[in-house]
Length: 86
Length: 341
Image (cartoon, rainbow over all chains, first blue to last red; front, side):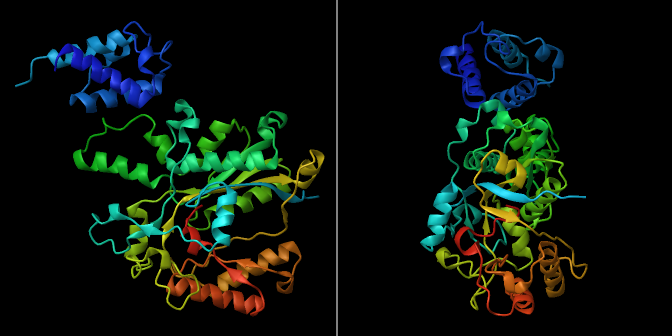
């Protein structure tokens, strides 16, 4: 996947699962303060990202550090760029 | 101890006829059936019944996402029916102390659809990481009551009755008791249920479902009919606004009816089969509480799901207590058996 494809798929998750309008999906948008997500939503965000990107997300520390949409992009880009195990 | 009188001041329904009491009544008046063939059930091995009365979900996005995310379809039905009952009763929630109004909404087991989604996920891969945060709130037995109370801001009693097909009647009876005792002023009482092949499947395994009308669904179920062959599942929600008579009069509310007697009981005879004696006992106790005799009764809305054995036992119980002079009918031919709703 290209970086742009990853960003578009993440934006689609925010549109479909959290019903946030595309116009509000700015990279610097704070996912709690600007996009209105809360702690329950973060669990569902992780589930949705796992399903959409066919990955397992286990790094809880890094997930807790996510604040902006750009952080989500970076987090997934980093996960997708990890060398495959084995 | 002086007990309050209890009246019904509002009604709401989400049924296979649509959202609202009016379309339900119109459908019944026209003698329409909402039962249809369930194409999506054909994939289930051994499921003989292929008919049901599904609800078409409407206007669910009027419920904000953060309130809706913990709701399965049955909770959405319950919220919509509760809102109708409140509007119909002319209740302004801001005028009632939050701890004096609550809800009692029953169902057989919570959300059948979400339970299946969860277990399909977990059972297949022994993996819980695909389970979303809100699945629990959608599944639990009290999901409809909890979600309705959350959405409407009710701070009083929140109770979910769970006794299969008696769930919603027990909800109304429990509400009646709580208001009589003065513990609540207003209670939204009723039930909610949603369809799933596994729900109909449990009855199918007991040979209690309709299987002969899969190709002409409009002809089933047939309560009290000699050609009946079993029940057909439905879904939806029905809610009554119960209120103390004093409270209703004080705010000038219209009153549909007064509840004067209620009873619920077990039979301790058989886990699935109907028992005529306990039915007679239950109806007699309700009449006793109301201070009425069988000759005072003008109409009986029977359970009558269309099963061969159940309808027979119920008809015998009604005849034993009321003779043959009281009109009896059932809603199942129009909207199917909505179980806990």
